[in-house]
Amino acid sequence: MPEEQAFCVFVKIMYDYGLRDLYRNNFEDLHCKFFQLEKLMQEQLPDLHSHFSDLSLEAHMYASQWFLTLFTAKFPLCMVFHIIDLLLCEGMNIIFHVALALLKTSKEDLLQADFEGALKFFRVQLPKRYRAEENARRLMEQACNIKVPTKKLKKYEREYQTMRESQLQQEDPMDRYKRENRRLQEASMRLEQENDDLAHELVTSKIALRNDLDQAEDKADVLNKELLVTKQKLVETEEEKRKQEEETAQLKEVFRKQLEKAESEIKKTTAIIAEYKQICSQLSTRLEKQQAASKDELEVVKGKVMACKHCSEIFSKEGALKVPAVSTDNKGIETDDEKDALKKQLREMELELAQTKLQLVEAKCKIQELEHQRGALMNEIQAAKNSWFSKTLNSIKTATGTQAPPPPQPPVPPREGST
Image (cartoon, rainbow, N blue to C red; front, side, top):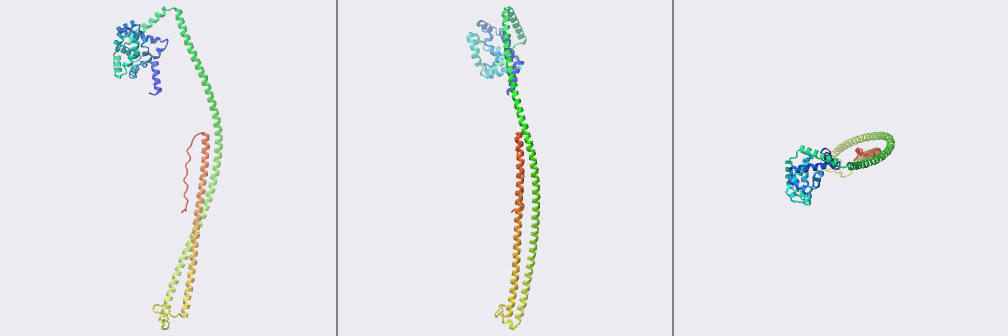
């Protein structure tokens, strides 16, 4: 059971079930309970009551803990739990049932005991008897079967009140007034002590509240100052953010222009390459045509030479030249010169093509370098934004004392054209 519920049950037993009344007015209600118990013993256990009377053993000598502690002082918990359950269900009268059941079950032992033996039996032997849960259960069954009429208890209570009034009337008025005066003085001293304690507690509470209020006001002043500083930092941060946005816009414009320029250069380079390719293709076609024409002319010349009897002797059947002739040498030299010229022109065109390819590669490298610079500048801009945003958050966290999660990092854009 939680502590709060246990305390509520305790308050219920003390006030609603009347256990608190047993401790008030010099235990007057407790003595009334003792009187009622002795009357019940006289009615239901006359021989045991007579024996206790002979021993001068009164109820308050053995039953005070039964009423004041609800049997929790000496008896085992397995028995106390049953008693508490019955008490919550039936009320304070269940104590008389349990007391009579204890006396009935121990009647034989008590009748044989003397004064000291009876007190020792109530103090030691009786609680040990009910350590076994089965004995405690049988005792509770017997206690529930005992009849204790409420009317008789009310009657015994009236008899006790009448007896107390007669005792007070027979008592010397001066002694009664002295006792009453002494009781009132004790109550007055107790109330004065409680008043002093309450006054001291009130003063202490006021001092503590005053200190707490002063601390709260100091803290409020500090927080107000921090709030002003934070507002100033926020204004400065917004201004810095605006400047950075302007710089970012300018950088974007520069990047856009550079990108457009690079794209235009790429287009020009592509057009030049296409033009060079076309020229190379035309030159290759022309060279092939010239080679074919030269071959055809060579075949025609060879045919004419072979048709001439005088000239055919110069060549062998395989077409190899045996005796060099002046005209043939001149033609070969012209053909070789034309071939060399064509080869030279072809080499020049290949050189121009290689230079064009080199310019294309340089243009691509320049584009990649520009893309790399663009990515680096974008990272620097993003880092500047993040640093500004983190500074703003740190300023706000310092002012408010709260921990905010860091802003999400945007992904770095991939480098276009990178290899």
